[in-house]
Length: 253
Image 1 (tube, rainbow, N blue to C red):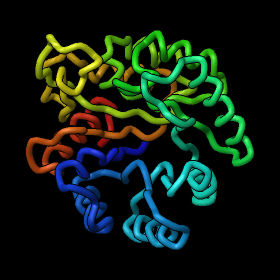
Image 2: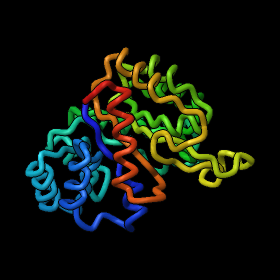
Image 3: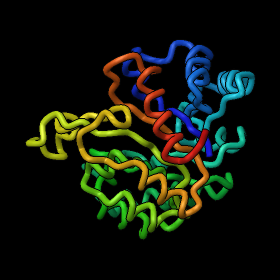
Image 4: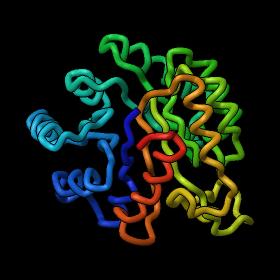
């Protein structure tokens, strides 16, 4: 198993990623194995960035290029196993059946590259809650899952049940805790209802050890990513707090 960072929250805190080398060094110094996505503007940039990872002994699990088709090409070319399922617009304005139809076409295209497409469940997206996740996984049997425990828990979903049901289809997991801002807000205003934070820093009653135990029981051995969408202090310090908890619940030294 590898422990990484889905570093969206770091970009929010700093305003962007200005120096990939420095970011990877900082994360390596506290015990992470890499970040989720290598993002590049063109092929030469992708190769240069992949070299930075390699020199530092760090890794990534997918590639994000300037468009979906290029991401599909670069990801297997750099030896990585999956891309996010991004079949056009993914908001809640899209008809569910239309989204599934497009996702299946996306997944069919991936067979040419021998890589998987993963669904990333997310508040405010087309696949937000438990019912939608279950229907999507049934309607799109080729899909794998990038399970975001925070977004599913925040939508009232059953994280443990989802792990038990889709264990063999889970390729990666996003871990985060939830801190409520205003419980009177609905999920349509989820960003006003809650924020995501370091493990142990929330107040939503999330229990991470049972999640880790369920993942290990189904044989999960992929990337476990920490993702803090909102930092309130030095990101490296807060990410270290989460990593220590992650390695404890997965019984990793």
